[in-house]
Image: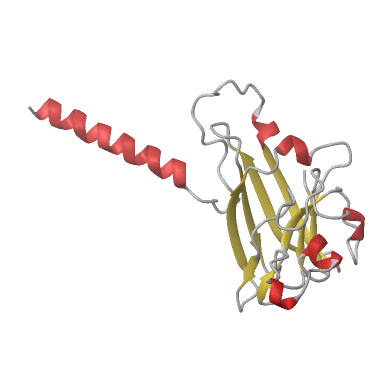
Length: 199
């Protein structure tokens, strides 16, 4: 019986260890490497499924980092963001269509990643808003199936952007009138305050 008990304990430890790895968040230096098991027919290298971006403000100062990991099991892309030194409150956060971050306005990054020509909240690059705490720091983790890492590394690249204000996702009830084009394009999230080229 002791051998059976020992085997059961080992199996429980392995099961718990597997769960811990599967749901672990980013470590001190960003998310761990590929946590998926089995290639499920995907033979791309690890680098093809990983991307990062360094967020800088209009003064060229680093204010955060973004990590992206495309999962092999379902092709969802895990997006993890950490920032500091930003104004407290909600901030629109998106992937933009061009890998250029020329300060101070970051307009060279183009609009939201939107290959389907959809209106806002259905753009491929639309992501949850970033909630910055009173001390200027924020962490966001989300999973999206609207783009792949390869999509971000097309001919002109892509960028991640933090905006000055909250994103309403073009959710304007009819009693307030019809959303204008700016709302449909950007969710009224304001100016661009931090930008990072996806690498």
